[in-house]
Length: 70
Picture (cartoon, helix red, strand yellow):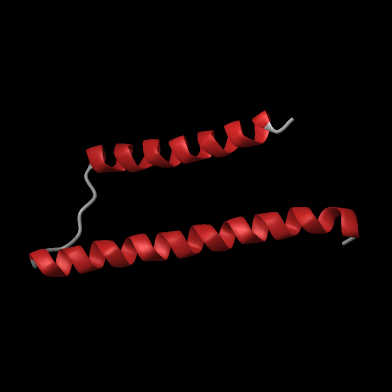
């Protein structure tokens, strides 16, 4: 891998790491809340839509930030 492509790999690897850590924290929060309520965590269709739209919103913000710098 030449030096020019190294920043691409590092950016993707960092993004994957941040995503994995964020997902792990979110799962831990769900488990903790389920234990407090003495129930199993459930994700309804409505909750899935909310999560999906939230993720899309974050991705859109990132894309907008990158397009503003050009």
